[in-house]
Each structure stands twice: as structure tokens, then as C-alpha cells.
Amino acid sequence: MRITLFNFTCSNLIIILILFTSGFVPARANTNNCEKNGGYSYVCGLNSPEDLVSIPNSDWLVSSGFAGNVAIYAINTKTKALQHLYPSKESKAKQNMQTYRDCPGSPDTNNFTTHGLNIRQVSDNLFTLYAVGHGEREAIEVFEVNIHSNKPELVWIGCVLTPDGLEANSVASLEDGTLLVTIPLIGFTINDLFKGVPTGAVYRWSPGDKGFEVVEGTEIAYANGIETSEDGSEFYIASSGEIKIMAFSNTNPAKLLRSTGRLSFVPDNIRWGKSGKLVTAGMKIDDENCGHVKLNEQFDFMELASCPRSFMAIAIEPKTMKITTLASSNAQQQFTNVTMVLELEDELWFGSFSGDRVAYQKITNSE
Image 1: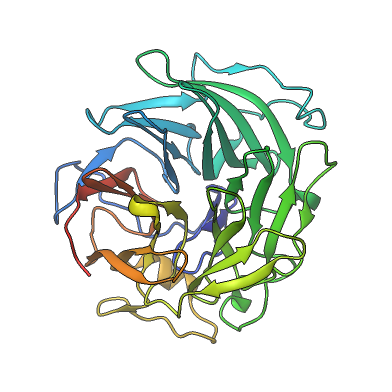
Image 2: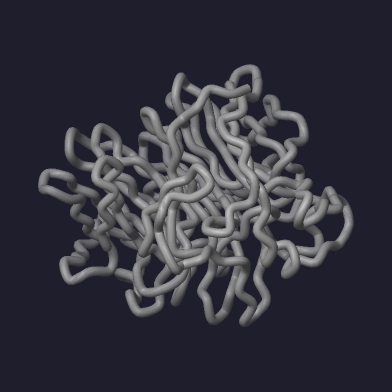
């Protein structure tokens, strides 16, 4: 999700993904310790790890950082060790001028945060990482990731600027290098989120294009997380305004194929999980301590973000949109404002738009 904190950098909020007001800080985790609590274990030392991706065929995760001085982290899922990937003393830049010739150069690392992530395998040890970047510019920043050594190595190779400096939320990629990004708010404010009006859309860029173009037919209420099918024929969007996951045909114009019903939580980022299912997570609409989010009405966003809410994670069969519950949690004082879930072997990993940690727990079978 996305939130704009002018002194806290940009990020996309969770439950309804929103724009933060200047100077406001949402509910944050208790940073006094990193011990297991409430059934969750933690990796601490991050700053607002809003999105996570797994590097295929490795023990490594990559985390975004949309606040602070580190924009990209790596976590070893076996040892739970944390690494600062970008920027770091080893940071390198080597622009791919053939593909990203219109990019004005590498980002200002003194004014750079990241949001949504996507990773695509190039060869056995080589991957391309796409990151929604904020700071001096709004762009999809592109990195080469190599895991031939004892930790991932990152090289910045290019960028694609968003149109008119619009703030993107999430990014997905196709095999040919085409990018699909969600832009949640275009000429609207957060107060329009639950009014049933299309506040944003998906934009597409392919190598050789001058810039992103809107994908006609994807205008929906707060387009948030996005993912593509393995064959590229479909893509899936988390609509935080309509509170559902939607499947589109990847043709022009896009065609809505199917969707879930309205969920009991506000979905944020989307990932592929086990057994060919999509996974997503977010804060619950009903919460006994924080109250009920009133849909189709204006709401107090600061009150929403400052109260630790319970959260939920689900898996979705993409052809039928059948839902299976992965986790349903009470509010955690140490970890709140959940934005996503990764399903890895025997563990679930959770990201958050605020706080200093990611959470993980052993997978339990539940419906």
C-alpha cells in the first residue's frame, strides 16, 4: 500500500492504502526487543518493510524499505541473518542503455525509498529485481541480482519513470521485460477510497516504449498489489477500494475475467504461493479493539493507522477464485499494519508498512 509521509518518505498504506498527512506516524511496533511473541518470530533492524519477494532456488528474501536510509534489504530464511543491499558500500551502477536509455541515471541514494517489488529469474544465479522507487523521482528502479557469493549482490541497471510523477504502488513483470504497475490515486484523494469510484488504474511499459501507458479497462478503486500468470495471459489486482482480488485478461483492452467476493480484510500486495495459488494479506475490516471500518463513507485515516489491528492472510485458486485461510491473527503490539504474506516451504512471512521488523511463523493447516 501506499502512504505519503513527506518527512517519512512515500509508502502505501495497508488497510485501505492511503496517503499519510505530513508528520503523522502510524502505529509502530514495540522496538524494545525482537523476541518471539504471540506465535510470531521476528527479524528486526529493518525500516518499514512493506513488500517481500523470494529469490527463487535460494535461501534469500528481498525486502523493500520505504523509510530510513536503506531501500533494499536481504534476509536469509534459514539463518534469519539481515543484510543491507542498497545502498551499501558495495553498491554498484551500470546502466543498460539499450533497454533503459530514457532513464536519467541511478537514483539519489540519500533520498530513496522503495515500495512494491517483483523479481524474475534470468539464469541459474542471475535475477532481475524491479522496485517501485520514491524520493527525488517516481520510477520503477531495476537491479541485477546475483547470488553466486555468500549473499546476494545488487547492481542498479536502469529505471522507467512513471507518467507525470504519479506515485506507483506495485509492479509486476512479463518474460519479455514488459512492466505492469498499479497507480492507486489519479486525481483523487484518499477520501474517495470507498465510494465505489475508480481512483486509479494499471499502466504498462514495454522495452522500446517512451513511457508508461494506461491499460484501458483497469480503472478501479485503489489498484494496489499486482501479479501476472506464469504464461503472461492474465494479471491479478488487489483492489483495496473494492476489497477484492480481480483477474484480468492481459490483452488490450483488458477484460475483467473474474473476482473474489468482498473480503473481510483490505488486501494489499499479491504473491504466488504454493500449489499455484495467489496469496495476499491485510488488516481486518472488523476489529474488536479498533472498531469497524465504515465502507462507502469518509473515515479517520489517522485513527485507522494508529490502532494495531488484527490481520488475515489467504490463498486464492486463480481459476475459481476459491479462498483458503492461511492465517488469522489478533493484533500484535510488536507487529502491526500488515501488508503482505509470503508462503515459503513451512513458513509464512509477513511485511508491514511501519515498524522495524518482518514476522514469520510455522505454517498450520486451516480453512
